[in-house]
Image (cartoon, rainbow, N blue to C red):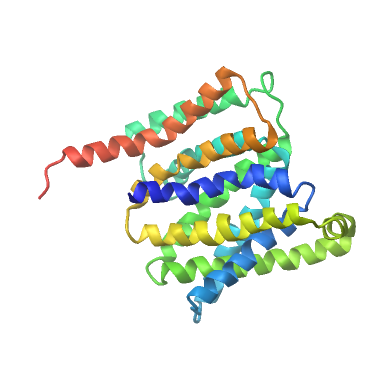
Length: 294
């Protein structure tokens, strides 16, 4: 049952790309990041108020800058420059970069199945993103790579803070502090280049409002809140099984809202990438079930 619930936040996160293109086209990514983070953080704070103390402020400010301010901006750059399906599936390369990061900086040698699946996943991604087969915005691709790196580093910091702070406090204040950083940067950017901001405000309509409600309330406040609640009741490995809903949502929303269509070969490559990202966790779960309990 928990795995099915884990698909809910993953599904909302995977919808970000298509919903943004469909309801908030041409909005500045920095502004979208601020609007996604700060209101959601304040909403979660209102539900369960917590306050950092001492050096926790500095730690959470660093985490919020990397995990929210930079990451959310990159996500919306991807949303406005890449097909929704490509963004959703491309983020499935995260396990490879996480494996390399922990191998290089934490001296954690990956298991054979992880190394094999990682190599196959990169091979499939190389084939899928082949410029001769599909034209993709290089800025969007660089944003995708940077976003994956942000997740890896941010997750590492989050894990280190888990022993000294409650998960809810980490979640709430990284959204508030990261959203505050984005709001400040968006203000400076609006002064320097006011036209995109004036256009967004001047042409604001119900279509935009529905998109913002989806991104702020469902995608971030509900999605992240459910994510935290589930992590108290299941392991991270179990939660990753729900992550399959992320690229599926990207593909489905891209098709329904934006009319994105790909060749059968490209869909096969996407499915292969999804399976390669999940296979190590599946193998690990099967081994744990077969091992005798002490």
